[in-house]
Amino acid sequence: MSRKFFPLALFLALLVPRIFSEELSRDSDGDAQDDMTSSQEIRLPHVYTYIDSPSVEQRQVLTGEDIRSLHVSSLPELLSAAGMQVLSYGAYGLLSKPSIRGFTDETVAVVVDGVAANNAMNGTFDFTTLSPDQIERIEIVRGGFSEDVSAEGAVGGIIYITTRKQSLGNAFRTDAFTKTYFNKSSFLDTTCGSFDYAGQVAENSFLKTTVRAAFARNEFLFKAYDGSVRPRENSSVSDGNLNASLMRYFGSGNSWFVTETFYGGYKNIAGAETSAVPGVQQDYNNKLTAGLTFPSLARVARTDITLSAQSYNELYDEADTRSEHYLTSGILTARADFLRRGFFSQSAGMRLTLDYLKSTDDGTHLLFSGALKETSKFQLNDVLSVSVPLAFVFSGENMAVIPKLGVMLSLKSADVIMSAYRMVQFPVMNDLYWAYDGRSSGNPDLKEESGWGAEISFNSRNAVLPFSLCVYSNYYSQKIQWTFVDGINTPMNVASAFYLGANISVARTFFNLITLRANAEYLYTRLLNKNNTLTYGKRIMYTPDLVWAVTAVLKSRYADFSVEANFTGKRYVSNLNVSYLEPYLLLNASAELSLWRYVRPYMRLDNILNADYESVPGYPMPGIALTAGARCVW
Image 1 (cartoon, rainbow, N blue to C red):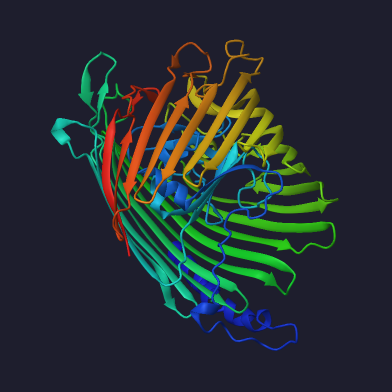
Image 2: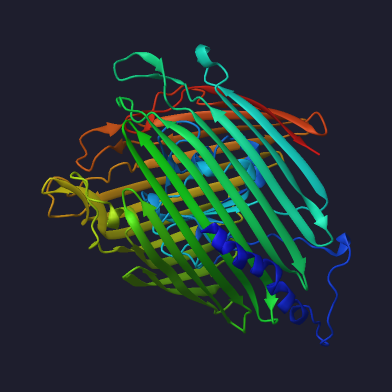
């Protein structure tokens, strides 16, 4: 399928700029301007693949510098350091799912370089397919209010990921590290290496390439249920990434880009601790994306158009059974931010997705989905502004209208932000089409999950310790859960729930030397399905009452140091609220030396307290681990 999209992507990349370049490069006298002719004239503004002018979203931002200072080896580790709950099924390369405000899977939208990245088959995004050193910026938007069309339909929140693309001149970088879990039988457990080039390959053209490969035995020691200490087995992962992106600026700052991304992974899946049947998972993902950006189309609007062809191939072998899943997606995203006319401004966008699935479990299906969205903004005076997004979303035969309202008061030393929004989530392909096998069956009659949310935030700017405090509440109904009906496990719209929580974020740099960041969230949840007296009034499974993280980074002339602490509270393992997972605290630290011009060695120590914990029942997590590596830049 990606081959079918390649000619169209190439057409967008090469021909469309030629058609529009003459019109877009005219000056105010109507004379055509020549393309930029020297590197001194080239300006490289940030490529805004995230929301660049928020009105009411509560957000947390991690820049590339923030990410590199932590020296984490995976994206799930980075999200945990940011104060998010992460449901992890093992060490490096194995499934990890972040949770925002008690929501996970398809209810947390992921947008990579402006393109929606959630898998239409199961609703998730595999965070192991991206490495932290590929990322330029991450924005975590909490809650269901957003003005961007690419993530429309998010319920718990949105994770915007922007990968690195451009650089003046030429820059080469290598990064290699090895990790040990202090298991004497396999002391050097994990090894990873990457090579990165970013630079200027022609007068106005820029190339970014990354090659990365890793092998992890994941044979960490853990304390088993019977009290013995033994290594984790059948959990090794071999994977690699290849990324190449070409960008060219033409006319008056207009640009086009073409990006090719490939991920391949061979993963031994041990299963739960008590599982006697390990399996093998093979992932082969490919994404070809082409886009156009016009900062001032016809001097009226900033416009972005992106076309992406994606393929997700997942193969599973377990004992005598084998399942294969081939998902091909074509995604067209277009958005325009219109210039302000007095007190009023407007933006509009659309996202159209065509998914083709061929699966041994779900059969063969074609699904058309998308979103049309318009946002009106009113700057009533220097203090009061109002944002009114309105979206129409659809997926197959399901459709819904999603209204939202945001109000911001910009005071002298703080912003007060209030928002209210509808939440809608459509069933994924696994829910609808899972083939009947005598034990399980999908349900094509499922309705969309829906609800309402509201929040109020207070963002202090001039305090001794600037902070953002948000109090929110959600009511969510028709939640899809797999349950037994006449002996068959099938998804049903059965649950309603109430959410009440508070989130606080703090960030401050002292003496241009020490940066302190903290994030904490308290969440109160209750199930409200009166037809089930066993779970009515109980907490939602896997949702902790408290999650917090504190990070301190010290930067000096010769070395950088960071210390982080992450806490995840008590979580029930079922909606009956009988058994639960114990809270756990992870303490991590890293250091990087900058004694030499081109080489920077570093070390990271994870789980210094050697905590024995599980984030998902039955899946032990690593104890203390040491990573040693070096980054070379020239």
